[in-house]
Length: 192
Image 1: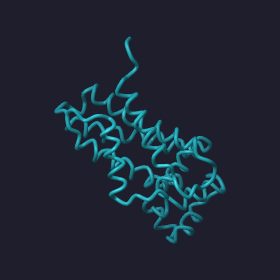
Image 2 (image 1 turned 90 degrees about the vertical axis):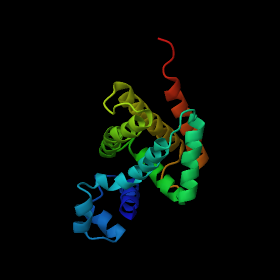
Image 3 (image 1 turned 90 degrees about the horizontal axis):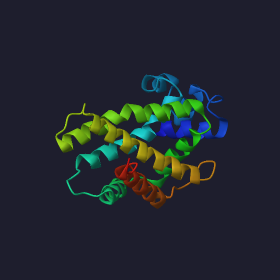
Image 4 (image 1 turned 180 degrees about the horizontal axis):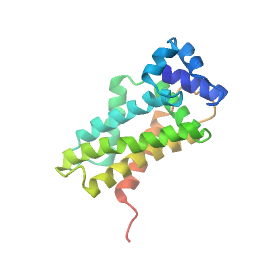
């Protein structure tokens, strides 16, 4: 996670193009060789910030019970963050990264690829909960909607934040946005 933090710090202060893999490695206190063993590009160094949140979402969705509401799911995610000791600095850094995706095309590509690559994980959880096939179009669509809603909420909160590296993130704002985004996804586009 320290490598991801250092990458975001450098990308924020210098920009992605002006930041080297060596600078990220030095700042994180690891050798360039070690960094390259775990990350194929300098942009991929930020992935741990994104995958941590996805793991929590899949865990909560895996415990989904019939009759659970979106608010209960979001409350459970918030409680999981609180219980796991997730620091607001982790969230603040993640939101800073998401904000950078608006101006740094190579980070935007990482963000979009992350979303695409992780829809199957959500689909697997939904399929297991419903007894449907992971290949069912409804399951794939629901997984895509959940990922898109969560990402839209995170982007919304990130855009509301100031520039630079905030000390703390407004976790309540993120949970409120997540609740709204997921509820909107559940309601769908309305009558057609």
